[in-house]
Length: 323
Image 1 (cartoon, rainbow, N blue to C red):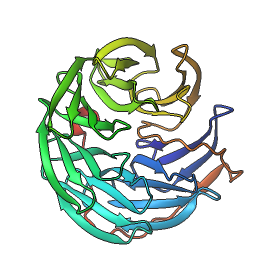
Image 2 (image 1 turned 90 degrees about the vertical axis):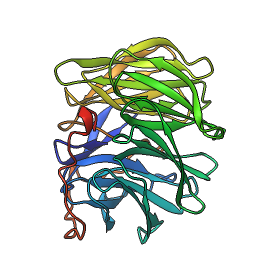
Image 3 (image 1 turned 30 degrees about the vertical axis):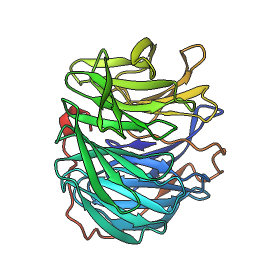
């Protein structure tokens, strides 16, 4: 997971709920993504305008490439053959091959923030925070084909298992929107108690978890659980202060939530809807990703040195308070 304010990554043993390795040297990491085999971790550095890959056997630097200004999120296609990075300040999405060889840039305008691939690999869905739209990219041609207005700054998206719908967190007013990716229209909307940051679907797509972060002066303290068929809230799950990032394991029984204002990760038992452990991590934890394999016995602290960036550096901004 990425500790943006602590300029570090934390590796958590999910079975023991303890931090086993801390990686330093990546300035302002906002988001991380583990590949499908659990062998490589991708992260972006907002200060260095760089995307990096770490080998999970050692957590040493394996690859790095320049991004556009203000990189926010990084994702891989389901087949692992391409990597995408949103560049908030540049209004673009960078495209890379599996080895981080640059493969193009997609102009979307606004301020693209979160993004996810559709499970069928045909579509990339982008949360364009500044434009207040859900942008749709054809992943076969890497061209933007639609922009669906959602009525507010949109932070992150999730895509249904059948690739038909996207669910978007809208910061103001606080709500979650269901977007029909075929019709490119709003198919539903539900209010949440505080400004949401990330959203994540359970494996069967029946429930959506919304991390309702709120703001520094009025932080949220819970996940909203949303029925995706009816777009109604079915309850909440207590977290730490300012829940931001969320991920669910493949069984659908456990979730992990980063709490940006108290620098912790909440471990959630989804069947009972209860926090079963709290893990102290670095400052301002944001993005989080999950691998089914246990972490390796790397050193307790690993330092990496990034190459000199060739893209313009960026402070990554506040992004509406929900970066």
